[in-house]
Image (cartoon, rainbow, N blue to C red; front, side, top):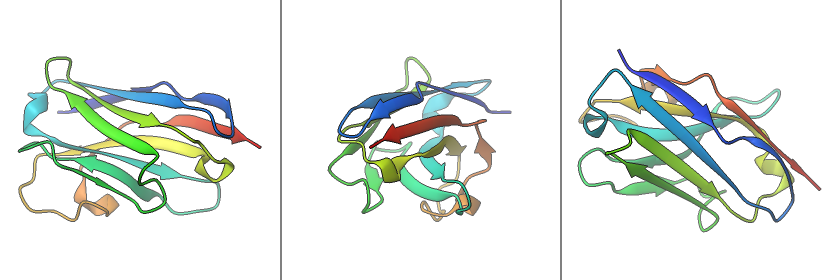
Length: 125
């Protein structure tokens, strides 16, 4: 059973940066594809970024491309999301997600079977 714990959220001014961390426990972390999703009030949870278990290839939502970077450290069982040039529209609860699938839809919440509790990111204008 995978357990995921996010940290690093907070309040930041527009243009600032934050780094989110997601620590995994209970499994061999390198066997899992990892992703970040976010959910703003009144909106559906949406894909932010993913990183493959096979070759650490990354994919991003168009809205964050060039500003956010996902990375993983298998030795620390941790995935990161470096967020730069933050905008008020980035305000949301950010969730870490994981799966051990070979074939899945990376941008869909249904593509992941393990989720963290989420961490709040608030960007003020």
